[in-house]
Length: 283
Image (cartoon, rainbow, N blue to C red; front, side, top):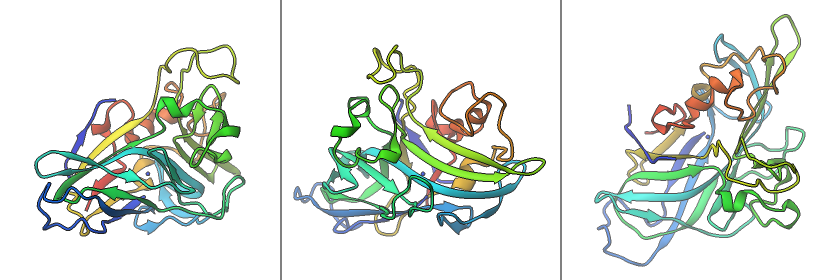
């Protein structure tokens, strides 16, 4: 299994590095070159397709039909063989801005989706011979609690905004499965900041949130054009019973640490301990 190094504190990613050759000398060139990190989302052995149904997901195995899959990331870096991190300077477009990128795999099959997709992080990086890739899932606090009406890309997406007090949904996975005894059980995984103090839900929190729920990963084995970072929703949900939801709680997991549906999925995302994550590995 590929080793994982974690800093304290979703998806097959095919990483295509324009100009970042494996034979380049680290630091030999100080001129940044274009880079495109291509992302693709998997559910087990199958690629993600919005609205498609997948068999045998979770525990016990159940049918699983996702209708939304999006997430924010920032702090994207490549680490060379000497251990030096090289930040990727993201270009500004409809899905990137101010160091933040939105990866969007849904194509509008859900109720608040969009037809446009985005499966790449684009920018510039100093060339070198790289051994790992770093990134943080989520939105930094200084960007998280803002006025949606005045937000610039990629924070201008209504479907990813939660509330002013909670900020944005860092990761949004909307899906459904057959319910025990008949019917459909919605499973919504909305990962964002939780425990954000304040008496006014339409205002920014009055102090730092108790559960920031951002996760920083460093994945070893990344060598450039030949590398692929695999993230699998089936692995993420392997301990989740998708056919039931605890009475009196939100459908699925809304980032509350005491929600039983969160107890099976947040650790597999690496919240609180990235070494426990079961979403990403490099091939």
